Amino acid sequence: MSKWLAFVVASVLLPAAAFVPSLVRAQASPLTVVNAWVRKPPGVDTAAVYFVLKNAGPSAITITGASSPIAEHVMVHESSTVDGQSRMRMKDTVAVAPGKSVAFSPGGLHVMLSGLKKELPVGTRVPVTLQLEGGGQVSVTAIVRSLGSN
Ligand SMILES: [Cu+2]
Image (cartoon, rainbow, N blue to C red; front, side, top):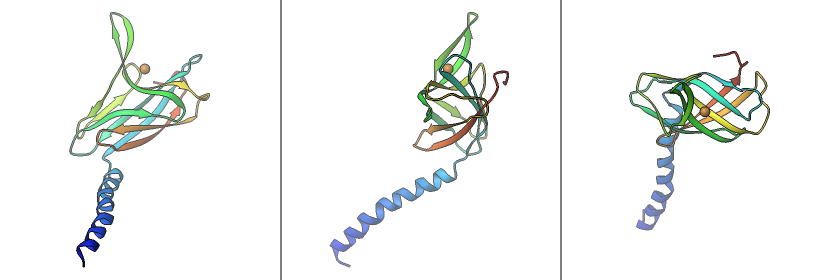
């Protein structure tokens, strides 16, 4: 094999080799999302998404953001009560320790959808994508529940 040919073969193979491990890692993601649902109060164009994240892997997994095709803005928020007033603040990251779960639930963590692009009647399936540190993604389908749910 000439030097030139070896160079061409390496240039073709290297990007493919670099791509395959990321595919394998995505398929084997130890992060699962269960019990995903949406709470949509009447008269506003915002909704909150709740779920439980479970990390079955040996190392921490960090959520760095979220997106949804049905909302203009999607942010991870945490509600808290300060001096008797309910507040929300943005969370840049949420880490799930190895072997642990983190619950997004009313009064605490949630994914906030704002600028909703369509109506969300009870039973609607809402697609949400969570971004992971390191470039992975996890897809979630959350169901709109009635307002009394928690
Ligand atoms: Cu919020």
